[in-house]
Length: 568
Image (cartoon, rainbow, N blue to C red; front, top):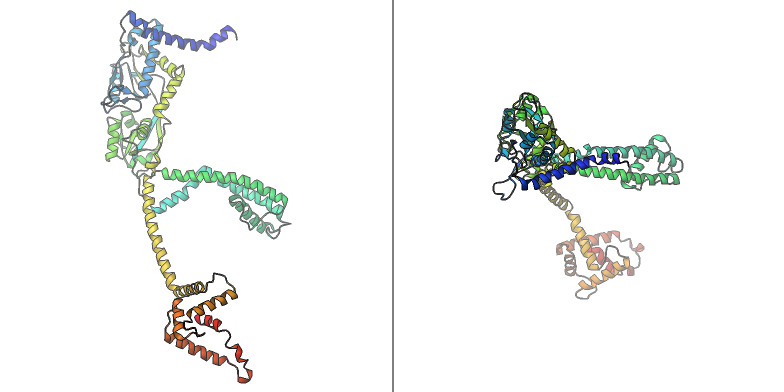
């Protein structure tokens, strides 16, 4: 590479290295020769107790021993910018600039936020910062923007009552509003119809039993086959028989597994997000919705913005974000209008507000945030002597060799600048509603099941009783659910012998009553007498005339079988 090109490519690196060496020399060896010069700059920020502006400027707790008095994104920004200003002033050779910047950082004056801008206008501050919005000012200039922020509506985290029907609607239908779920479902439907036409065309001749050769009913058959194959890998009532149709079915199974996976994932994530969505009693979906609520703001700029955006807005100005959120939590106001990054920081990271307040709707009225610089107090219309070196130092920190540090600090303090709901807090209202609904549903289900069981027992009580007797008889006979006639006869012989107490080869009435009661049959002697009389009458009526009677030897044989008939 030519030497000139190498120098051009490395120029910015040498410049940064030279600035660092000079800054180190000024902070070290020069101090050994003369006293360190204090900066003459008057710098102010909003850091009074309870009136800071997190995460831009955060005041340490009074009992936090050894901690830095002020921290925050803009405090880190100012420290980095001032060190670059010191190095640039040393290289400039401008004695007045060196006197202003000095070799020691200026002491930060802690003020109320609106006092910062007032004193910049008055010229009693040279530099001020507290999430200042860049706007046209007659007496204030601004450095290049180091951040973009807007306004955000914040409400109490107060969930509305959710009933069981709303839970069902949210859980079942709302996930289908997910665009990924809709896309997956549409893909399944389109491909199912397309595959159905191919399957019908291939199967209509050789498989007419399952796919009607007529187009209308045949396509219905094919769509059914395509849907059940894609969603359940086949129902079994229709199958492809030709080799081409089988190959198409295999391809469709693979594709549908992908589509169904997307659909299932989208529905699951949609259902989870539904649970995480808190149902606020105060709903804001557009700017005009704010007209019906009492509003609070923490700065004059926010108040002016709301008065211009919402004509009939009823807004109260509070001196700090802490007082604003206190008014919100105790019910003095219904909606707090805050800097969006402050709102997200407090709701995400500060225990006092996490789960208590919730940013809602979208960020609106986005503006650039920058450091403020007073105009030249001696020559009207001219920049402050420090303006140019301050501007270059900000650019160097944000876009030069300090860029990585700047991006790291922004990520540390602001994160993604979005509100992240705690699942445990966000679903508390839904869990409460589900718990109440589950209890009610369980009680109703138990009551219905109990009444249903009582009704079944009453209606089928005789059948149930007879079934219990039959089971008892099978158990007594030593029979299972299935048995042969031989097993039945052997069982009858055993039970007969068991209850033929006197060994007479016959059962008298008492023995029969004992047998039936052992089987669970509630009978008496009178019942047995009536049964025997009825049996004799039936037998007499069925006996043929004397000339037609069969030999008597056949009557006495089946005594055990007759016993079985009697017991039933």
